[in-house]
Amino acid sequence: MHGTHARFALDVDPRGLVAGTGVCGSALALPFADASFDVVGAFDVLEHCAPEARALAELRRVLVPGGRLLVSVPAYQWAWTDHDMRAGHHRRYTRARLRTAVEGAGLEVLRATYGFAGVFPVFAAARLARQRRERRGAAPLGPGLPQVPPALDALLTGVSHGEARLLRRRDLPFGSSVFLAARRPVG
Image 1 (cartoon, rainbow, N blue to C red):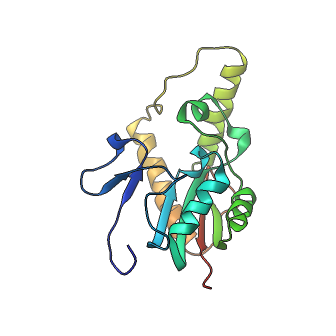
Image 2 (cartoon, rainbow, N blue to C red; image 1 turned 180 degrees about the vertical axis):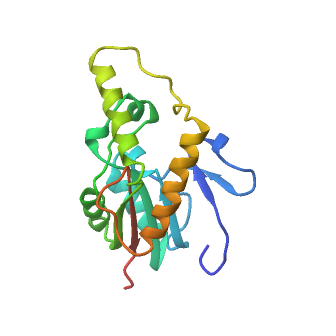
Image 3 (cartoon, rainbow, N blue to C red; image 1 turned 90 degrees about the vertical axis):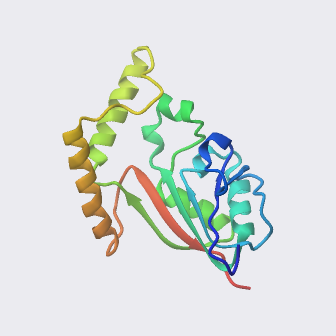
C-alpha cells in the first residue's frame, strides 16, 4: 500500500500463495484500490492475459502517479510450442511489441531489454527441436521443464549471473525473455 512497505503476491490459484502474504485474484480485475502501490511487478503474467490491454490498464490503475511497473515476458513468437499452450500463454513478445503495449496503456517506458542472452543458444535449440518434434506428429513432451544435468545447470546459472552484471550497464539485443520498467506519469 502507498506509504508502507507491505508486499503482496497475487495469483489466480491459491496453491501458489503463502498464507498471510498472498491474495487470490486476477490481473484482469485487481482486488486493490486505485493508486495503491509505488511498485508493481508482473513477472511472466501478461502473456497469460487476454485481453492484454485490460491487464495493463489494471496495472496502471493500481500504481500511484510516478509509480513503477516492472515486467518480464517470454520472447519471440517464433519460439511458440505446445509448452506455451499448456502454460496458458496467449502470446510471446519482442521488445518493441511489449514497449508498444505498455505505452498504449498510458505508461512511460523507462527501459526495455532482452534477458538471458547468454543461455539463448540453448533456449533456441530446445524450442526448434520441440517444434520439429511437433511437426512430425510426435507425442508432446511432458508438462514440466526438462531435467538439466547439474553441471550444465551450474554453467548456465554462472552465465546468467555474469549477464546480470552486464545488464547494469547496457541493454541486450536478444534473449529468451523481455524485461521492461515503466512509470505511471504524474498528473
